[in-house]
Length: 121
Image 1 (cartoon, one colour):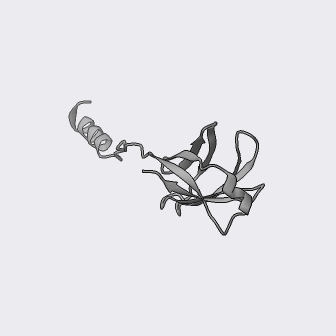
Image 2 (cartoon, rainbow, N blue to C red; image 1 turned 90 degrees about the vertical axis):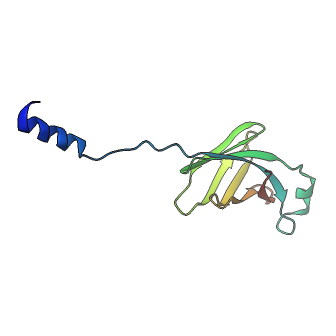
Image 3 (tube, rainbow, N blue to C red; image 1 turned 135 degrees about the vertical axis):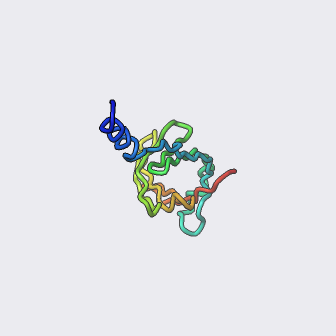
């Protein structure tokens, strides 16, 4: 690149759009399932409290329990989800609520037991 045209080409290349690499957003937290009394059948009181690890990448939330990864689902801009998944032993659960506000509920689809997922930290 020499002369006036070389300088113009270089200037055009340098004035193009600049893409900056943004650090990846990821948030991980522990939650404990606390039974929602009054909204759950009496039999649910016999279940032991379970702890889960949730990871939110800004686009996807994933949940892991004692048996390994349980679910992964896309989170819309509103943060509201409603996702049904199968546990490691085949029971169906629904996780719902606002991921961004960390206000989530877990429902055992077979029994109707409902838990609030409360952060342990």
